[in-house]
Image (cartoon, each protein chain N blue to C red):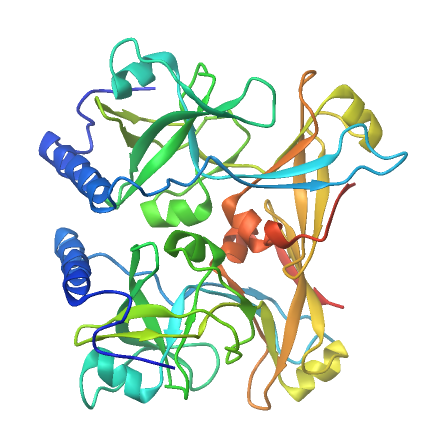
Length: 242
Length: 242
């Protein structure tokens, strides 16, 4: 994963122009613009007697970034740490206060993209296909951490910028499961389930991938395209099945 | 539907600032930026022997605008007409060369939104929920032309701007059908079908509303959120069923 203070695909004056544009946009809005949260929406199917060990929770993951420590220092300065804005549903995971700007090959930018913590040993940018079309990035569908053959992107922070040469993905829709959850649904790590969302924009999502970790609680992650396609806010019933 | 040269919710200097911003952005990109097409993607399920009277065609409708003649004149000047960029799938429908800019209540803009022709007796703006969140408009789910209780928006053209007080919707997913199509699928106008898209991001869309017209050919319309959620480009099989 290559990075430089001066990204190879943009010269310094271009980066400075883009940063000015971002700052100008922030000033224009009086600093009061609310950036989109990293987790936009949240829906819970109430537990039923004899039901699953954990209630069915479906969260929409808005675009976000994971960073490794040396990249955070490039973006936010030497010694930079992530500071917590709020806890996410899985214990230990959090939305940080740190925001970056993404620059795509069409010279378009997406500002105010939130970094999720804690830090990882790789830097990864998770976008929707809508974002990919806008930026001009052809997003591969991947499970977190699988970066083989994925594209890169330029990331701007307040203290510097870097260009990653891989790690930009659309996250494959997935469900976090503990051993008890997998036993209840009769699946194993890597299997696929279906997720049914009833409501005015009802959808059945095929190929929801099971991701096992001993310490998680049951949680489905879909992206903003998927959350908007089914209008998760107006869901009347949700169901996970084979 | 109210409109004025000076929209009530924005003063003239604000509109001028926004127009300058749009023009500046166009100049920045050297005038070569390709605006998103009104119909972004297109997928056809090949006909089979004994199959439906028309092949199953699924199109993604990107954000677009329909206009009534007096509104077009406000935006593009007295005597303005729509000029054809390209034909759409339904005979007589076309993407025009005319583009407008939308201004939402969060003072954010979406430039380069295409007008579809021919003109109608109402002005209507069709957006995805992703667009609605960005602009700050709470979009009602509606069939074209049903504007009761829908929100408005400010529209900027090269010769003027107007604020409509209703007509901004998320189009309900629907399928255009002729008499022969309805007979084959065993449905009538206003009924709902399901649309199955197989592929790496497979989805079954519930509640695809049947819209009858004697002169149409079979065509499903979904929006960009829905097209991106199922990654229509990579669909391996499509099916319409009850």
